[in-house]
Image 1 (cartoon, rainbow, N blue to C red):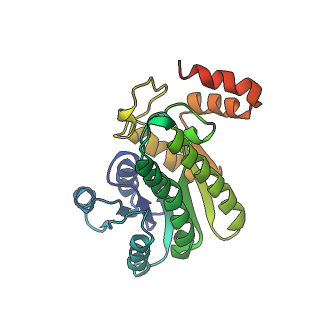
Image 2: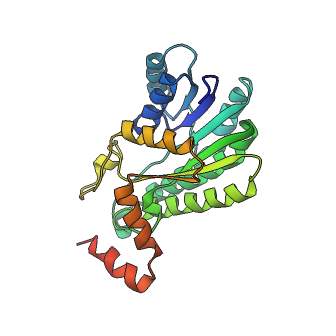
Length: 245
């Protein structure tokens, strides 16, 4: 990766995004870090050192994104955009708060749509736009229905965008498994093959510098879920139901 790369990471105040910012900055890239909390971004930018830019925004608010994009356009064309921002509220559908469910949709899915529209205008020719789905989007899984549904939508959006922007923008899809972050710490079920944000960041960078469209990890989990999602419903549904027991 050339040291002159400028990379915009959205959802960078903690977790995978912060780990990714640290790793890319250590490798010589200039990072623009975005999230809702300006205070957290300022702390991270100070840790990263001079030249890195904290830029607060809310991905569910298009005006907020447009203002951030106007600031970034003054810097020059970007090499990569990695969109990771998401919120999560585990639970059964009957127990979810409707307003919180709507916020999950507006942040995870509509937010990804906003970045899919705005991002390409900020990238150099051949630049890279990576959207973050989840292995939870492979198949409807217990305890994360609204989150899983939004991530299935992001997967579909990335696939469509890959075809639409072919030859102009390098669209990629990131599908993490369980990563030890503030979001997953809310789960009250066993999470197999958990990885640290640092390992997740390393896997993402390796994947985004390869030729593969999809970056998915850890593979001992993701391949099993891929097989499950490929099964016909009559075979997959009983296996999925066991996950609730």
